[in-house]
Image (tube, rainbow, N blue to C red; front, side):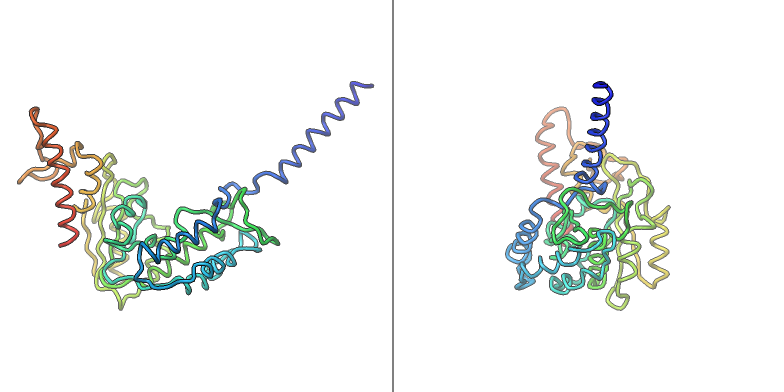
Length: 316
């Protein structure tokens, strides 16, 4: 009798704990809201208008936070639409310099290094609205004014989640306000191709470019230093992109392994075969400039020379 009661108690406890875990545990598969999101976002806003790009003028960073937060708070986290963030983007909008827009796919960290926080180019992440939310995560809860720090829905769980809705609106806004020569940096070593047929650039940026404001689109396809050459100009998905842009009436150029970007990659891998220099031989046949004697000095001179070429290429 006692054994039967004990087993019943044990089974009941297990069922209770399972139900408790389901209530208290992760509702979604994605990471929860970034801790201290409000402080980080408002701090980034002030950093941007005071240090990164003071030219944008005064912005009310607390007002920006409230507009951002109200876009997804107290709503179904799987029913957030880009237009829910309209007020935030209206308040945070600023001019994007002509000829400085840099779009990308599959190489965010490289693009961030290359743009150098808007000193060379102004990527989406270098705008105030992009800088505000870059690398952060967030979501709310239906019938609650609080943020969900435990978990947030992924794109696989629901398409209309708060993060994707924000970046869709960001991409559309960025494209609409880009002008002059447009630059696109693609990863030629990306699995599946440099240009995703379905992606933010294809779906939320190209359709919102303003044809009458754009003089040319320059595509740069750069392979990873250690990566394979999967895609290149006039081939595979890059050809699809070139054809699409030309059909839309744009003047398009394409360059493989654009030198300024390669110089940047070589600063981290100066000994790689792709980073050797020669006065006349093609890149694939260049010989290392170092020798058995004075190797360290030659390497130092190489890195200094690459840095000089990189700066010169960007200036001219």
